[in-house]
Amino acid sequence: MKIYVDQTRCQGHSRCYMLAPDLFEIDDYGQSTEKINVHLPSELEEDARLAAENCPEFAIVIIE
Amino acid sequence: MSNNIIMDGNYLNIDWANDFDILNSAYIEDPFSIWETLREECPIAHTDRRKSSWLPVDYDVVTKIAHDINHFSSSEILVIPIMDGEPNPAQPILPYGVPPISADPPLHTWTRRLLLPWFSHKSVERYRSMTTELCNNLIDKIIESKHPDGARDFAQQIPVRVIATMLGVPTDMTDTFTSWVRDFLEFADDRERRLNGARGIFTFLIEEIENRKSSPKNDLISELLSSEFNGKKLDSSLVLGMSILVLVAGIDTTWSAIGSSLYHLATNHNDLERLVAEPELMDLAVEEFLRAYSPVTMARVVTEDIEIKGCPMKKGDKVLMNFPAANRDPKVFSDADKVVIDRKINRHVAFGSGIHRCAGSNLARMELNVSLREWIKRIPRFKLAEGGVVTWAGGQVRGPRELPLEII
Image (cartoon, rainbow over all chains, first blue to last red; front, side, top):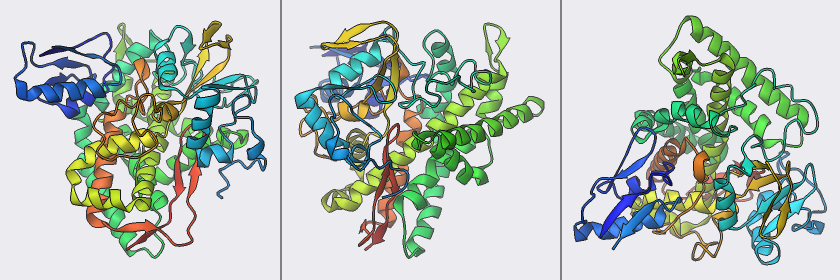
């Protein structure tokens, strides 16, 4: 699984960062970016799904 | 019934689909059953009351409108216009409105960037210890009080002090700020009262801004005064508008969310017991309280005729951004009308969606988290006071204003 944050959609809700701080980082404006841009270790996959399913902007893209 | 609820007497006769009234006491006390009926009968309600306005209740419509900034402008964000049909006396004082909330791009974009760093995750942590101490001081008094009120003695006291600290204005004036903001937001049909609230806030902040021009401090107002855009210092009226926004938006909203959460815990003992036993659930519980008791409804104005799900919205019409109803849409949330404190999938839009996502959401979350944690740590068992009456404010911001409690 790989993930990325669609920068055109992210509005800085920070839900992903709160749920999965290992996977996302946010800047001073709330903009989120993925920390890992290669295949995720399997133990982080559930967190990634959870973050995607809680994003109010549908900004987190998961590539299985 | 508190006097801030407008009594109509005939609320049972209201035609909610064709002539809804969000200031009606039935809507303020229990909007949930009204939304449920509307979802089946007419998911975008309409009224010509006050002004032609639309009230969507479905998640997909509310979020679609929030994202369509070309057809739906933020130039009218109050659900009931303060100066309906009359020249706006605020115009010469606030030529730019209260950006970014009342602005569309490009003004929205750069004013928002000036505010956001003050409300980043990192920045709001600076206020965590003062919030914790403040909550504990309030709880000390509540424990000793014979008739504690969770809204008046606790929830209402917290956000206003944090915001006053951030703005750099006196924290001993918080009762005055609270009363101005309530006058402005909660008494939508009382023009004099709203103007009085607005006047109080304006006059006070104009003086604070003038003082900082000669002696800057280390606070948000001073930083805005020293900020530049395109090589030019910000106009004083812009600093005023942004300061008004921070003061108004940061008080009623978070206080309502804290109050509603306490109300839920006072009336749902299983949830209270579970949170006391498993405080690590607090982050999820806070999101669920935000979803189920979303305090804020905003408004947009239609910029050109557009049809949404068969509804002919005309230029100049108002659309009420019913985020609270969207968050109870059963098409999006399972058991939408049930509060599930460990709900894992919770794509709620209590803070809005799109470019106007609440800039203070991190601060609100921190305050909710700290206040509820400290409360249940020190007061793990409580319920509504026998014979006490809970009163609600509604309209733009919904939350309990009197919440008489009994500590068990």
